[in-house]
Length: 67
Image (cartoon, rainbow, N blue to C red):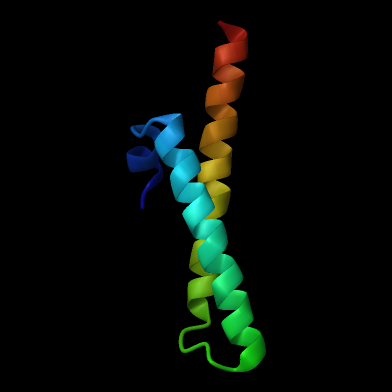
């Protein structure tokens, strides 16, 4: 998902999506350890998405402090 699309979402939605991605990352890491992971690049994609969401949440938090 692109950053522009993420910025349009409410913080509650972003937090839900963040939790889902963290769960998925945990599952992917477990699959990697057991040798069942089919697409190792998915780990990179999920980590990038987590970072994007955290960045956007932090930007909104800082914007709220300035006002």
